[in-house]
Figure (cartoon, helix red, strand yellow):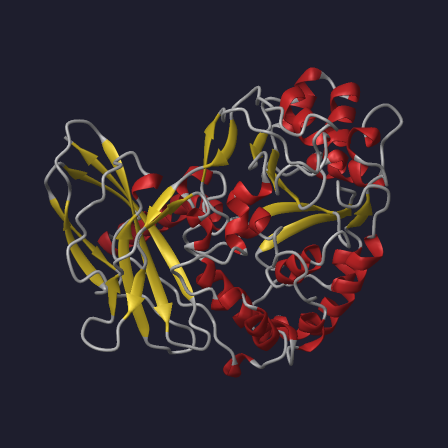
Length: 480
C-alpha cells in the first residue's frame, strides 16, 4: 500500500512539474526582417541562424528595404542561402533533431514593399510581408513573436498600422501584446514612428550613432582582449572553407561581421539567455528599460540639415546598459582559471564578454553540416544538485554543486562560477571565494537589511574542439 501511495505521489509531482518544464524548454518564435544585399552581413547572419533552426521556431523571413537599400528588395538572395542549407540539412539532423527542411523554410520567405521607411506605411501599403506578420500573430499560439529587424522595420510598421485600422481595440491590443522587437539601430524613419504610435510594444534598440550601439560588441576589435574569433582568417578556417555548401555561402566581411546577429542571439537556449529579461544579460547583450537622454539620430536616417538635432524618446525602451567585467584567463600551471587583472566597463562589454563562446558554438555547428556525429563536438549538459532558485538568510552559508554535469561526447569538463551584479538587485560584487573553477562552491550570503537578489552564473566548458560552453543561472534571494 505504501509503495502504491509513493508511486501515485511521484506521478502527481511529475505531472505538476511538466508545465513548468515545458515552459522552460519552449522554443521562441522568430520572424526576420532583412535588407539582405545591402551589406553581406545579412547573409552571414542568415547562415548562422539556419544552424539553430531546430532550436528556434522560424515563422518568416521577410525581404525589406532600409536606409542602405531604399528602393529594392532581394528575396531571391534568401532563397539562395536556403538552397545551400537544404544540401546540409540531412547531415545536421544527425547531430540534433528538429531541423526543418529547406522547402518548409522557403515557404516562409516573403516580400515587403520596395519603399523606404514611412513611404511604405499607410493606406494601400500592405504587402505580402506585412500580411504575413499579421497572419503569424493571429495563429493560435500564445507565445510572443520576436521580430528580429536587420534593416528597416517599415514592414512591421505597416502590419501594426493595418491591425489598428481593421481590428477591434481589444483584438488589436491582444495581437500587439505578442510583439517583441529587437532591432539593429534605426535604419529607417518608421522605427521611431512605431515607438511613438505603439507605446506598449516591447522594443530593444540602441538609438542614435551606430558606433555607440550595444550590438557593435559582436564585431568590434577591442584593446586588451583576444579578438581572434572574429578575424577573417578564423572565419575562413572555421566557417567559410571546407564546411560544405552552407559555409561556402558565408560571404567575406565588408563593413562588419554579422552586425544583425545580436537581434536573435538571445533566443538560443543555452542556460544563460532569458529573452524576456534583457536586463539579465545574455549572448545578445544586456539592456535596461528607461527613457534615454535625447540623442542625435543616426546620420543615415536624419532629416537633411537636422543631423545634430537631438531626438527624444517618448516612452521607455530597452536600451544600452553597462557591465563592469573582469575576464577569467586560462593558466598553464596551478589553478586552471584565474581572474585577470584588467576590468572592462561599457555597454559593448555586455555582448562581447560572451563572444568567444558563441563563436565556438557557431564553428561547432558548422562542423555538424559536414561531419558525422562521432567526429564533431556537442555542448555539455550542466546539471545542478539543487534548484536554480534559492532563498537564503542574510549571512547564511549555502552550497552550489554541478558535479552531476555530463558531456555527450565524453569530454572532460571545466567549471567556472561568478556573480553578475548588474543582473540582480544586489549591485555589489559578491565574495565568491576560491577556487571559482571547482565543480562545487560553498558561499556565504552577504549581510542585507532588505530582500535582494543575486545572479550567479555557472559555466560548464568541455575540452572538445572547439570548446563549447553551456550555463546555469542561479538566482539567490537573500532575506534579512
